[in-house]
Length: 180
Picture 1: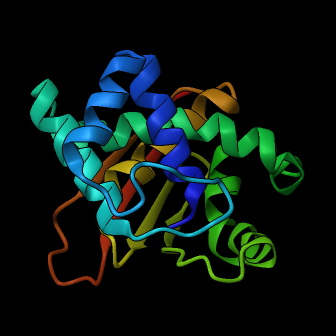
Picture 2: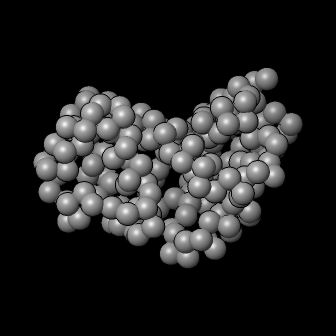
């Protein structure tokens, strides 16, 4: 997993709580990296799981909610660093529909070793979009947080839900709706 997720996670914990909690988390989790990350290197995903689990237990906040909050937190970083990738999109559904065939292609140019999830557009109208999210890491709630913050970026109101009516599909079906 790319280091910017780790560096943003540490910033998220510091801003949500304080620097002492970051220090305590790193000390108590006994990480192979000792909590030292750079944005462009890759690190073992298990370290992020360890950090998230520690924070969840320490704060009594469910992992799903922490992942969603982290996604919301990371989105502005991605927009700041890679605005040129998204500047041609005027609405969030167009943006979400282009993740697989446009955005991820650009990301791969920057980070050849990135292990990206797959997003398959299942259905789209002017106000709705169904995406199938497939990831070996199961970061569905992180993706939901990114989607929710993208609504703010595009200055629209919207909702995203997990559709559990299709248990046989590979991945997770996300139903996205623009409310404006």
